[in-house]
Length: 331
Image (cartoon, rainbow, N blue to C red; front, side, top):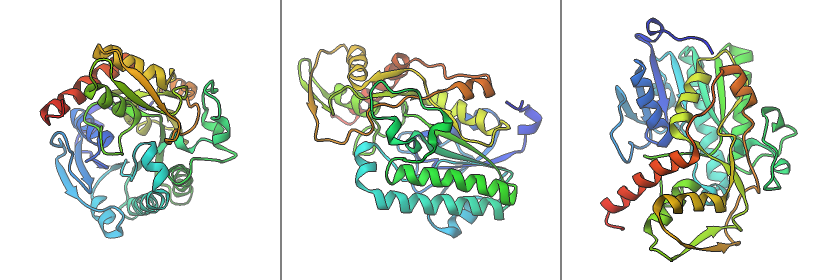
């Protein structure tokens, strides 16, 4: 990783798109703590706490004029804006997601070029990895080179893979420095936990918070699906380290510790101090059977690895979601 000193940071202006969302909101705070001037842009303001951005602009980044406005006068861009959600959402609205994200990302790349931005970070996803490598719960951890031959998830995954190539082409053709991270299941406080766009850890924390001792709790699938989950503090640290590195090729950004969905429920149940009865619904969307991150390149190139254990991260997340539900009178 390149060393970034205080003199290099001083006066540097950065843009975070998706700053009203979960990861973007945390990233704004992280960059402010490091001394950057930060402009946050999103179609919405953060839901659970006020943004720490120096400027926050409400813009629809599907529009070219909005992207030009958002990228004016900044040195670096962290492009996290996206139409996305949990497995139920991203499997139902394929055309909307692919169209909206294609518009956002192609406009943002071109606006970065036009406005002479120095560096562009793009948030990709583990959804780009081929389904044929993820058909067993006992999955081999996915290396960056496993992306091809391509067979990503429909809609969201195909658009992410396409935009990885667009970043490559903008570097080759125009000299725009691009950095790409493939996120693996990010979770933590200040994120969506209800309404259909929440990810699995938040949904599990919500369900268990609401449940009474001995209640039935619904699990999508048979509970044997496997995943790895990365806590938000590790995610924003990794984003920054990747952006400031010399590596232009995509890097995995996730934990390499895999658990079953059953085990995810067990961990949160233990945190909550509740004994619950699992009820499996095989008719609901389940995604791939297994997914885990191979962090070999991340560890080697950055000399860094995510630190938060799943139990520690889930404990923080569970207690935050529980407190939000108590405030709203739902428990």
